[in-house]
Image (cartoon, rainbow, N blue to C red; front, side, top):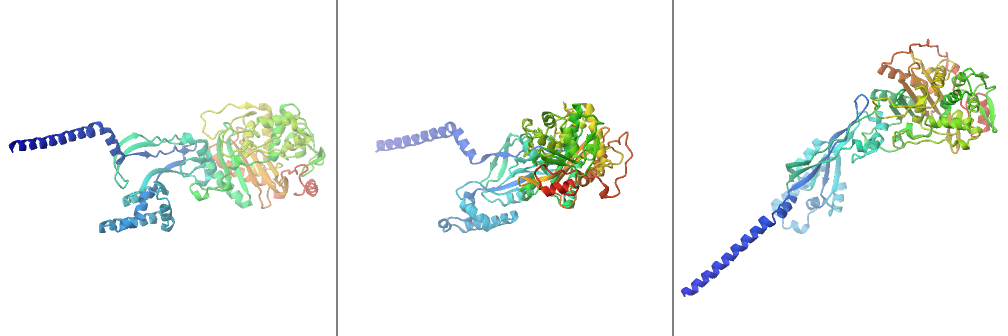
Length: 613
């Protein structure tokens, strides 16, 4: 009996020993061999790596004033699989619920309705979308909400609903600088203007942080920073916000007053080629996403093609002077204001008779410009246009920029050469026209443009001699004096040079008889040029369509403000301001020549008689 008991005790002891050894082995396996794996699996269910949004760099004007900045916002998203379990629970499970579980579901659904009310969303509209995606794990609810509202949503503590931090772009200048500065999409990617072309420079680098979340997904503890967020780099533009503001609102008043389709303008630093202002109307507010569509988004000084009209006559005169084909006192016979080239008639509005090159520009004679052009070889005239940047890339890479088109010189005939002398038969954008006038403010040299503030003026490329450029600049001063086509551009105390242009708009493969584009390019002050301003108004419909009458007053008001802002001293040798004509009827008007062969014979006859087409 005792022996039997002893054997039983030994068996029990052996079994207990085996169990103990098994526990020790298991503990060793779990605590030692599997420690890393289990720790990792546990961390996956508690510790999370959270992305930290990085703000973009600021965009500022040349004086450091903000044009674009990043503001903190929140994004609300949800896990459809989790949320569906609360909004539409399994009917079979509902039968097994305790009263406490039922109360939790009811409270969740009430909290979810509160969430939708705060976000101004429709429950019948959103809930079906969630249920339709119940097998997915991510769905945006609303983006770019205020952080204060995001905090209130976090406090609801709804399982499956999350609030993340992000950034939204804000533009303090609103519509004033919208076309140039551009805007971002909802993911904060630049898709227009400066925001697009300098996207990589402005973009920040997101950081990473390790956090612990509870079962509802809320962050309950920050573990450590893995990688700090890196803010994007700031960008200093050449734009002057004050000048931009004044220019935009002056264009807006002009467009409304004359019911024009569009109006656009560019102001350059006459010595450095920096863009000080660039505006077009109609405009849009980049802070209102409902406005970010349609043709009003076009940055028209670079996206719209224009035939420059008489604004190109100074370049033909400059080239002819530079090549010695004419002299400042050369007499150009314009006769009765009509000439025939290859069967096509070129006309002036009035019979001017004999004119000097200065008078050709002052009175904007198409016949005079055509005869000066014919003193040049076609290649010489074409090369002049090419050298001053016509139909060339400006190098700014602004979205939507067009280069324009000029027919190759080898294809030019006499009619091409003469019509291009008064701005028909080719097209450019307004920014190219403004850049071309740099040769008159830089001793005959063309300079590259910049929308970024420069530390030093760039080197220029000589196009014509300093003497020729200076002679033409003096000639252009006569345009803004009585007897010229733009006396309205005069500024008290300053000498102003400029050139008007008025062209028929192309339409249906030809030209419209009664639709126009008016242009004016001006320089001030003449003694020491500081600003170049080029402006175009397309399709004005209130009866005033000449470049001088329409744009001269705009140039005068905007440039007066610019001279004041930059404290530019008056010209040292200012000529006494001459009185403007007593009536509008006495003011010389811009010559509008019908594009050869494009208008009806009735229109051409009326033009030859001095009537409005």
